[in-house]
Length: 252
Length: 252
Image 1 (cartoon, rainbow over the protein chains, first blue to last red):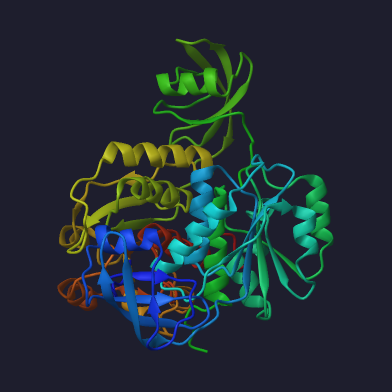
Image 2: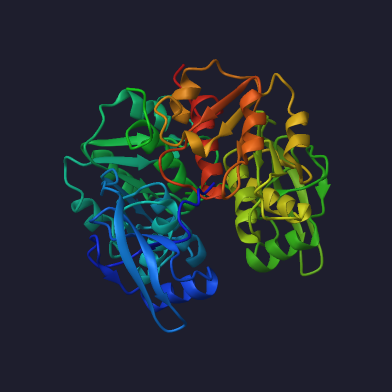
């Protein structure tokens, strides 16, 4: 369900302003020249996470070099909702998937979290970042989700400030009528910032449940009666949050 | 986020009743014996989409043969909400994904639909069915989503009865404040049955939009300001529907 507004849309680390000349990196050059087969004069979109989105024209393009002229701003910078996704990482392909999908759903921070029942021991941050960048390019975000280093649940929870609402997607609440995520969010005042926590296959350990149960400013929510894989749960939870609290359009 | 209630959970085509003996198929035998390394006496769950879920004990197990004794029903049969997913199919891996995720989210019918901007020309039904079965086994559903044959949008729309609510996930409504899917559902009486329609990359053609705009009993909804891939859009739309209308727990 993509709208094609530009022939390509690229994240660049450079500052963006009218009249600047941008040299895309090698992968981007290959993409523009050989995949998209763009030519001099074609228009692409650029963003850097700070300066909004800019229209740029291909000034020169070849196999080994490419230069883009920045023409005009098309959208001012806009922050994504301040929404972290904390999740117990899963196997490689599904992990890529979570980084992509969480980016599409507008998470601002993606934080792989080691829980007691987590089966994964290493996470490749660069790969997650590449997935987050690619998803941001495609989903027309203006910023890139920040990938944090894989860390134990206790450290991650300690780094969530008390005033950041913790949303605990609790598999034990699956059939609890008072825990439907959308209803819980609708009944609770909109938070300034939040962190959604998704457990691994097998859920949270008894010890983790005790720690989470004691946590202040924490909502336990249900994502329905079916058992969801971690990647599905992440998208479902982000959907519920964004539709009620986040940047989905609202009549109010 | 999976609870492991049984050592394995299998869909079987057989009738299920107390005292019956079930012979799993070759793939299932391999899975039980070589992947899960189960032994005689281990307990598995069986379902067939009709008779609910049953506890069964491994009576014998080897490389080439396996037999299960059905012991007792653990859950009565329960229908999924009557919710179809109509979607323009995408490339292979993501298509598998949609069948899995729509099953996890409880869709009753999964119907690949050919739209004007759809890039896919063939869909492997058997592969989609295998994905739907595997997802049902893992997600603890009691039924299997029905996979319908790839068909043109006009034929699919003609086969949606007038009294089945059509939910059109309309990329042109992305920023419309009155189209937030959750708000639209909450403001509309709960339908007996519904079909969610997800477009391809590039959205719907002008002609398709005219046809959909004229459709009675159709809600246009927004899934937020970001451009979603078809698989993400399917999960997000099913989440919104199930949380408001479907079988997610509710206090009312």
